[in-house]
Image (cartoon, rainbow, N blue to C red; front, side, top):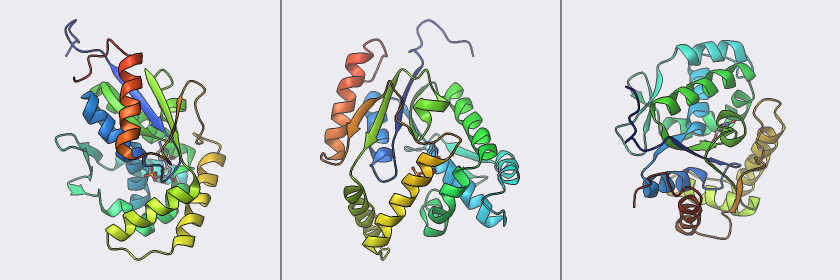
Length: 237
Ligand code: DC
């Protein structure tokens, strides 16, 4: 359908940052406040890792994995809030948070052929969902370099480890604090050192420390910036 002059404008807000900074939570809350849709790209990499596990594809076989993911019916159900990630007719939203998936996802995410497939899918999603808060590692740097507003979130590794422990404990999973901290540090290292789409802070991103503030405070700061910088975006009031 052609866009009419009365349609609200296309808006992409990106939120990038390392694991455990509360990105998904604040991205979803910010999208709700502003009346935008929410894209969790980490979930897509996790689903690719699940596909690797289920089809016995070695995570480093980027070409095979890229093909498998491209052909799999991986999509979001946009009728739910937040959108639910589906693999064909299966809701994989919970399964992709399990330890076996988390354990290989950084290796999976380092494969350039797979990244190409998912970056294309993310751009296609933005065509169909043109008012979006998109969250990940490379959203402002690679996928949407012309985003209207970019945030880079970060927090001290100890704070991030404590949060992850609390989340897992709340989900009834037993956890080893030292191991969680090590896992986060290892994921940071892999995310930042891969050659394709590494975690970087885009030069034009607004820096947000999520370690010393609650999610509500962080979202309120982001919302204020978004409304100030994008006065004509037609955000929800
Ligand atoms: O945000 P998360 O923990 O769900 O991300 C899972 C993995 O996917 C993590 O290793 C980083 C990677 N990722 C990525 O490489 N690029 C993105 N845009 C989003 C996530």
